[in-house]
Amino acid sequence: MQDLFDGDAKRGEQFRICWDDFYVDFSKNHLTQETLTLLTELAEECQLNEAMSHYFGGSVINATEGRAVLHTALRAPRNQDVRVDGENIIPGVHAVIDQIKSFSQGVIDGTITSSSGQPFTDVVNIGIGGSDLGPVMVTEALAHYKTHLNLHYMSNVDGDHVMEVLQNVTPETTLFVVVSKSFTTQETLSNATTAKQWLVDALGEQAVADHFVAVSTNLTMINDFGIDPQNVFPMNDWVGGRFSLWSAVGLSIALGVGPDHFEELLQGAHAMDTHFANTPLHENIPVVLALINLWYNNFYGAESEAIIPYTQYLHRLPAYLQQGIMESNGKSVDREGNAVDYQTGNLIWGEPGTNSQHAFFQLIHQGTKLIPAHFIGFKTPLHGKQDHHDKLMANFFAQTEALMKGKSAETVRSEGVEESLVPFKVFAGNKPTTTLLIDKLTPSSLGKLVAMYEHKIFVEGILWNIYSYDQWGVELGKQLANTILKEIVNKKGGAHDSSTSCLLRTYKG
Ligand code: F6P
Image (cartoon, rainbow, N blue to C red):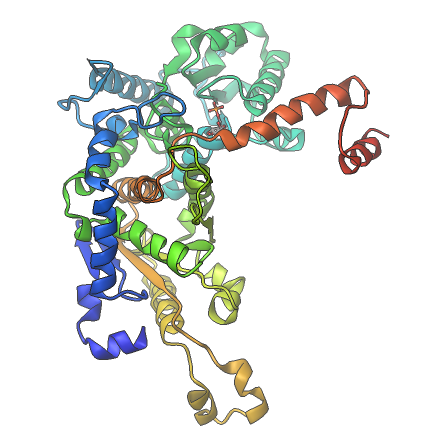
């Protein structure tokens, strides 16, 4: 890469995309113009543009589940027309947005109260996977914009996790939002049942109607659970769980940061949708990022992609993207059902900088693995602590330069290092990074960022010829867990391998 920079003084200006409040620098990658042209041709050969019109247009692109994939419709303006089975879904989308806005505003300003007439102080979101990770990530990311409501998240079926949440809230002023697209998820139903019992023990059965609301597609199951149908925020089966934060699943976001900020988040995502839908491939941010990832994954054998946000606010972004990316593109059969003979979805991991510099950066700088990384930073801090921000951003810029340039043995020697230590102080360099420099962390810029990754997932799925919107791979473990749970509860052994049998005997005593 150093040679590429030496040979072209304008490389930093040529390999970048400036769009809106985003500056995406992909010059510190193993790419030439020819590479990019060839990768773009690959995308054309895969009929990416045609696939994009099916994606935005509501075709059944989630073929193995027989569904359209329309998270983009959830942030479309009121005047847009998107059809599913011949019906324009946008009026319904906006009816739910209006319902979210009025309910969250009522809870925030205290006109919607608890069973004892007190304003709510705390909200517990009960959900897992896409019914948890998006709302947590966003409310953490937008903590600067928070309302007076304290948001808590109950996801794991671990009873210790449940009790830790419950012991930090009071029944009289706590609202529970039960979020489950299917309303059949073991973790969510178990946790909601425990939370409901805890509330009933304290306030009586009649309090449930005021303290529990639900988000789901499964209205029958919600009714069976005992949540008032008036307290239901519907979602549609054309929204995948991991892409659902824009739907009624975003209710906790609206409660946590206010309905106006929730709306700005949607508008930001829509702006990225428009960029993605209308921009030529070589200037299209999600497309270029997907092509770069494919380049390392399939041509260099890179196994992972690190996401390093230089803001503590985005500390849950890597976890959120782990589901988004790995649940989508962790597939090993192509669209015809044949085993692929090439690598598909890569590992996603990361932590905020500068903390991560003091944890795993050693391996990125001097380890044997190739780890392409995304560095995400913001020009303006939210609390105005410019001295801190300059230090944070100095590290942000220094790391990508250091990873690219490295440090030669000659340079190390010239610093007077003893010869026996020289090999240990050499940095090979040539480590690829892509830098996203964004003006400011706002609801709108966060919406753009998340939508950018959603579209990158889509493009990668097209290039790899896999179905990105199902997740059959999570089912087997769930089925076995149900079988094992019955054996544990009934104290009966089952037919298992010797390892699992011994472990179960040890657990059950
Ligand atoms: O883990 C599988 C999964 O289906 C995810 O795709 C989904 O986000 C999560 O479970 C939760 O599902 P639900 O919202 O239906 O409870």
